[in-house]
Image (cartoon, rainbow, N blue to C red; front, side, top):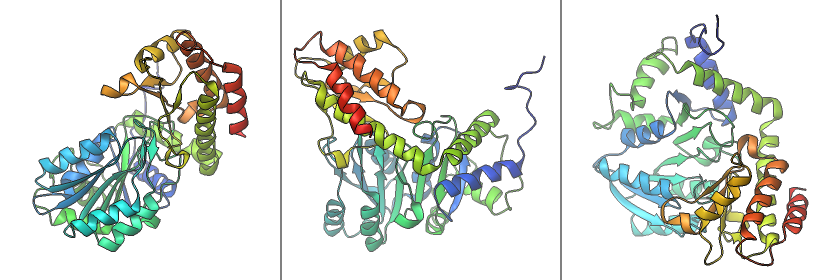
Length: 366
């Protein structure tokens, strides 16, 4: 008996290259795009290890847990790291980045997360990119959560290494990811004796054996199911229109934020300013005395499929994440999530008004 997931014709190099080209169009980039055969941590780590070393002085912006991870990788490579940490309820500013450059003029590498789904903030990459270009530093961007939810424009923003994953706002598979690479970044890798070679982490292997060879022979057997799923995911975005997909995420974020404020009971947006809030996911702060992880567990008893989670680590006590991305960026999911949270919160607090929250969410969706 044939099976659609098992009895597949081999994925050709030409089809692999065509999927890379479609991802490049999604990013509006003329840079080389490499689709790597693993979750986004693969190119995120590979890009740092390829371009950073003992001679690197890196500005590592921390607006959530991934920024902390990047700093660890940079130090492990031997780079000198200047951490710029801001409170997780806000975003970094270009002025703060410029101040770091003024204090450390030797900085030649900048690592930044565009949108932190884990903390619900998003950073102004276009403005920061201007500052990075003035400094002449290499610009590394984690756009895994933001792609599909808000504009990601590596060429226009001067991003040298832009990593994306399909599993969040794109609504695609988790097991495949991509990175756009500028000519400056390739040159930095070629000059780095510590850049991974003959390794699954190696971007230079992909350049020398795939890109420079005209993309005619793959390095190894591709993750075929994930590649086909990525192709279908991009096709769906193309059919709907990227602007339409992004607008749906903006509406979902606005609706959750407005609904949470109207709900009462002490629940409030975790990210203080709406302009700093990411459209991919909304984080909420629970009132004093209400443990976020317990509230989420109670809410999920009504519907375990809702995209609700408590914050990671210490944030599990005070933060709720509403992961309204991909197929969950819909009015129905927003209504269901607010209803479940309101019902659970009403067991602990008075003044909870679920109907008012739903009215506010509907109005905010627009």
